[in-house]
Image (cartoon, rainbow, N blue to C red; front, top):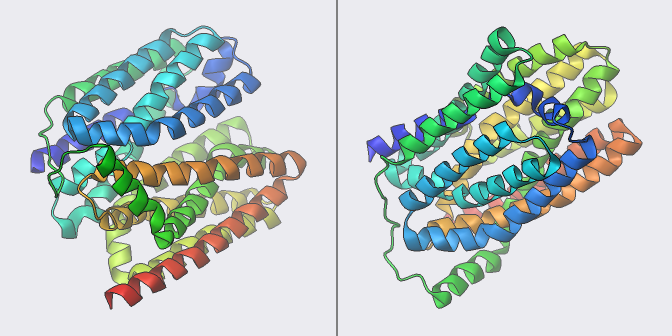
Length: 383
């Protein structure tokens, strides 16, 4: 199954190469889409992801993980073709609808393929490399955009189409992996998986904790950071260089397994949640460009190390053969939490940016408490 791992690495790298990434908002605005319309499209996309998560997990367990991955990679490629040629709100909405189908379809399937294709003691390291290669693809695409592409947004879109076409081609060579337990997946089996997921209140607590850190990172490092940088007097050019630096930091996820192995599960949680909370507090208190950059970079480091760690812990807790369905249910829970936190972040940022950073710190500390409660339960039940 080693071939699967390398193919998934290639897919992650190629799908990370979004050449228009540094100007994604500007790209849409040039085509006449307003900022409000962009946020409306994002909201519709999130709702679709929530609706499709569980059905896609069921389908993946029935038709197989390879077929699901191939379908999603091909649709991903087609969505980039639509984005490249889009020139109105409705075309960009269509692209996002296609993307929602892909995100829901791949959710849990990609990590299931990696988990079932690797040796269990090395799975976290595999997840770290997988996440880092996606970031490496984005970094390379961003550098090429800055050096060679510039204002040629159409070329950026075309190169992204080529990259995603190659990722769809790579998916065709995957080998099917079987869940640990063979089973006929019917309505009764689905109800069993759903009941097991929601009956485990400690798992739900863990997933909420995961969502709190993940969504704090996503909202602050993607949206609020630019407002903070402008308040500090940084130019657009300087913000661009910081974007590249933050992307490079994302590669640190490859060291997640080594860090958590050395610290242990409990101390890893304390370290990563603590770093994220401190970063939010610094951003709330400072008007310094240097400290603001440091806060964003620290938050990025924490999340980069956290994602492979939490993915490994999620997979360990799957006790049924229908892994994709179980992980899709998990994703639905975290996405639901994220939808709420995003609204809160947006409302607070509209009133006072410092309040939104304080909210991020509170979420991270609350997440840490939930993580520690979950860990105590895990330790008590496994000695």
